[in-house]
Image (tube, rainbow, N blue to C red; front, side, top):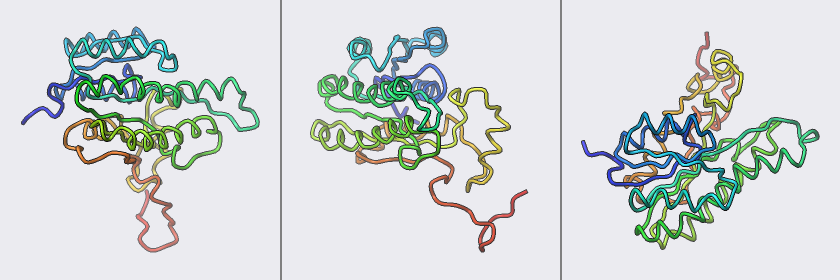
Length: 258
């Protein structure tokens, strides 16, 4: 069976762990050359070494305008840049009344500005390549929200909206831009939360469980591939049914839960 990303060159920001690691792994498995861009040097170097010649690590603070050109250069050393995954993100949880401006702007800087800078930096390289695919990792909290997530939701909502603007502006260049909206994913972003505790929070979802990073990677793989050649400006939710609505156990059709 043909490799789905054969001959493609990709940058995955935040690619050293969590969702980014899963995306980097599946991209290499499907034939892409990957620049793992991250601030986690030890993790990124170790992953690139494990993945072999198809992967290289590049230290990158995505919120820094000065660091994006080197990421693009590193990618073009591998071949024409055709895929960018803006995945790098941080989470700060606090009530609105207790969120400092510094904390708010830190989240905005990485999640929102990092995505903006990445998209903008990729345009000339993807134009030279004759087109490409940009996949922006938003969140279900960019569509709805939760208490304590004022900064995170603001940033992810912006990613959702910027994706649509970019799709409108870049389609004539052959550049597709889509957003992916994970929900209920167990990643290092969850901090000290145990897997058992995290899973217990998601038993009420239609699928009755939390999600795996590989399930996000599968969606990103599709959008990065030529299989998604007519998809742009879209938002692709991978959340176990979280946003579908609420299961009311008092109404017909509710599953029995043990």
